[in-house]
Each structure stands twice: as structure tokens, then as C-alpha cells.
Image (cartoon, rainbow over all chains, first blue to last red; front, side, top):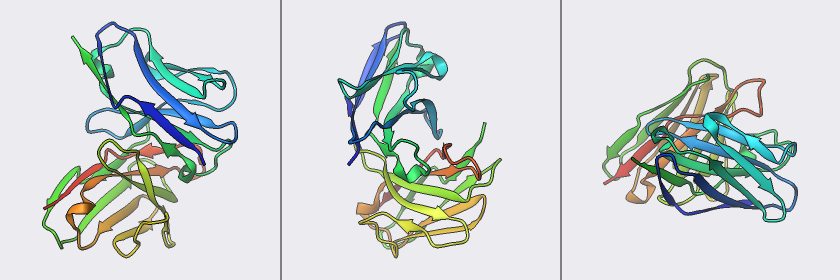
Length: 116
Length: 116
């Protein structure tokens, strides 16, 4: 069975500092991996996804994530945090070539706070 | 971008009453919509898959008589929590899959249900 674990339910960084949100996955087959962001009072938005092409995936708003098979990780990073990055971030995994969202498994989320 | 509107965003009700949550795709048609719930500090869990014009498919352990789903049109799915109890208090969120675009998911902003 597939699963994702997000380490740290809450991460706080200073504005301008590096953002690192951790995600480890468990899958018996090479997975598809996703990062979603939820801003206050809004729906989840797809930040980026890995679908077995390049291991370093660039997403919106300056975020990127690197698929590391040896570490079964898909950590999300951003070099310099901005106040507008404050949100809830969800890591998710699905079977490759997924054809239905019912295959997506979400992590428990990490709340990112930005200190002025 | 595509928008999914979920209403209400927050509801407080008395134990034993029923609550209806609406999920609308505003600028696209969705033959498939999904309903999730999230308990504090836990993962977003899929409850059911709502299919336009047919019965919803419920995940194991979800009571279909308690969580009534209706997907009467290509832009609207509703989730009714019947005879709500305090243990039903949770965050409910819907997502919609655009017709003909099966690898895209758009999420509503969620509904926080509190049952007194």
C-alpha cells in the first residue's frame, strides 16, 4: 500500500530564509508524487508533480522538489521565503499513470509560517 | 484557472440535525467529484467518489446512509451529513475532475463542521 509521511506539522522560518518541507513516501512501484498548497480560505492548488521524468521538479511560486529514490523522499524547497508563502502544504502520492483522483493518498499536511 | 466553490465554509449545528455541503465547479463540467474529510493533524482521507447521474462509490468504513451524496448535474455535488453527532465534527473538502481532463484535480476551500 502507498503512503506519505510529512515530517513536522508546523514549520516556521524567517522571511528570506530557506524553506524545507519534508515528505517521505512508501510505494511498491515507482510512484507519482505531488505537492499541493492551501492558502487560507482557498482550495488546494497543485504546486508541482513528479511523474518519472526529471527528478528535480520546478513548480509555481519558486518552489521545487527533488525525487530521491534512494531516500524515498520528495522534499519541497524554496530558496527564499516570502510572507505570501504562509499556507498549509500537502504531499501526496499516487500510482503511476493514475487515471482517477481516487488513487491519490495525501499526507497530513505541514503548516508553514513566515516570521517577518 | 478553474474554480471549485464549496459552501458553507463553516457550519455549527446541533446534534441530531442534518447538514448539507455544496460543491460547485464554476467554469467547467465535472463528471466526477470527490469528497474528503480531515481530522486535526491527520491526513486528508477520501470518503467517496461522486459520479454524475449515478450512485456514489464509498470508501471502506464510510457509512453511505449517514453521508448522502448527490451529483445531479455536471457542476454540482452535495454531501449531506444526516443526524450529525459530535464525532462527525471535521473538515470536509471536495474536489472535481474536469470532464475529459482526468489528470487534473481542482479543490474547494473546505467546510469546517462543528456538531454541538
